Image 1 (cartoon, one colour):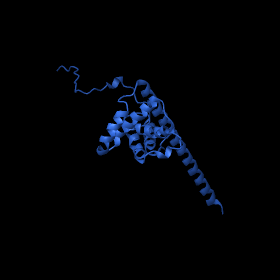
Image 2 (cartoon, rainbow, N blue to C red):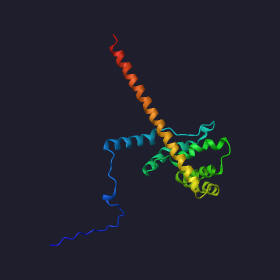
Image 3 (cartoon, one colour):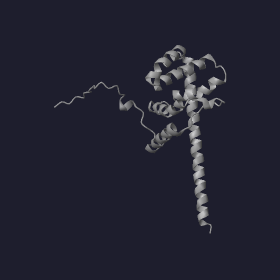
Image 4 (cartoon, rainbow, N blue to C red):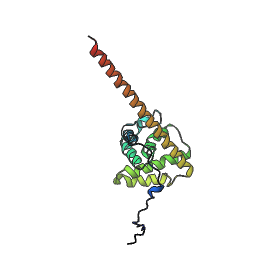
Length: 186
């Protein structure tokens, strides 16, 4: 019986395993990264432009930051969500006029946020107004500025989470030592 090597095509566009890079991260490291990424999405502070106007960010935007972060994480992007960009830039828009490229980035981001989170009844009227103001697409330069801002917010957010975890750990460890010393004082 002659067995020839036959390659079946099932219509999947998958790269052969031979050409893929082996996974060099250990399971422990992957698990640790997954846990930190999840904590980052759920508990990291919202980074906003430092301004007297930073308290004026609408609550619905702040409430939607977590779900936006999760959607960004699931998509594999290691950067801040568009919702975070809107939250960061909003106080800045009240300070003084911005250059046109930043206006385009802000209005485009606001339109993306509205498409994602506003309900259909609000959307019709709001979308008409926003589509008249916001550019349909950003220029290559504006896309680069937006990507840089998203990466910068992401790094700041994760750094703030790491610092808060370190300070919590120090407080807990100091508290245990104080309690232990108190137990042995007679």
